[in-house]
Length: 446
Image (cartoon, rainbow, N blue to C red; front, side, top):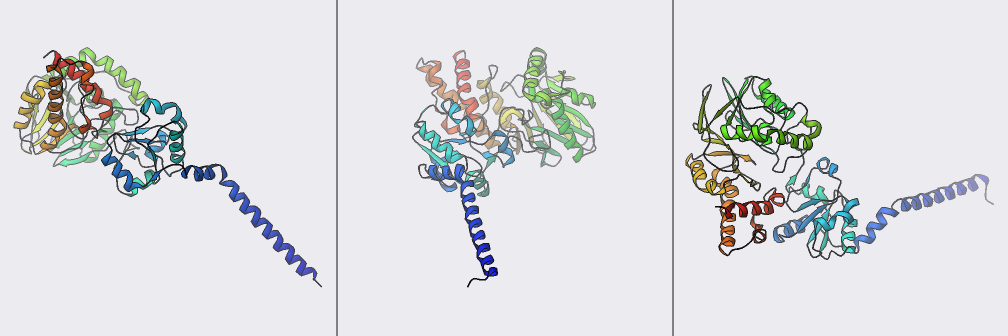
């Protein structure tokens, strides 16, 4: 005969078993919507790992990467895969934006996200939309970073207006390397290099920066290096990211120096440049007003900054009116300005004189025999590297346009110039077609 305590024990065990079963069913129900969908999708799509993705990036030059995370997530989770073939289309917008981003349904595509939750669904969606060569990078950005591969961020210094804080290039020479990308709100307009030279009798800054607050952020970093006063600010040309921060430095008592042609450009177009900056930088433009250089020169200006001899040089026509380079002859260091580029495709403008740039002006640049080059854009490097990113690209493009003109070709032919050898240069997707257009039009008139 079953005793009451034993019946109580049986009842308790039944309750526990029933609770466990219900809990298990609830757990199963919890993963239904997302996990069951992913399980089904993963049976239909082609997943690849980090090793396979790296191989595809090296092999397939037409490959397009689609990051389906929200833009705000990218920097929080360590950045995006560093390639010019990377496109950010949030998962919720994929159906609406994919055709504008990738027109051909045969284009090889790899989608990815942070932890392989959204990208499988995105790959499945693209396949349903008719894209025939789609893969999912299952390791996600976390796997890419853990493997030590390169990433790109909208802003490397979230607590500062600077995209990168200054680093020491050589004795007494520092540079805050800007993002090798267009000026944006996230990078605060810091997409060029902001350099400075420290002496025992003051500081010389190269580039006033894109806006008042960015100039102030640079000054805060200079104060961490030295107590010396900023005496001079050199403008590499009249572009906004070189000169719009002038009024901050003038408030600090610094003298602003520019080439005479750059000063004329600021006079003629400064207000329009300021207006565009304010529109793009919004609240970060606070305090910025258009100012004018305090001193101009034509060919060469010598400055003795304490024990350091500095030569400010206009070597000739090149990228922009009034381009200058700052030369330290005793250290063989040149802060080249937009005479030289590194790690990004250079932009051409209507006033760019490529013929003079690749011959007369570049020859003068090379004749200085610099051992360290701080380019206008990209990390400090050597002469042979900036030659690759600057002169070699221009020579190739000029040669291709000459072939088109010799055959009485048209502008549409210039758009077909094969620039794939430069496809991994930062800003390629923004500038390649535009450069072909501007160069063809300019060479028609030579």
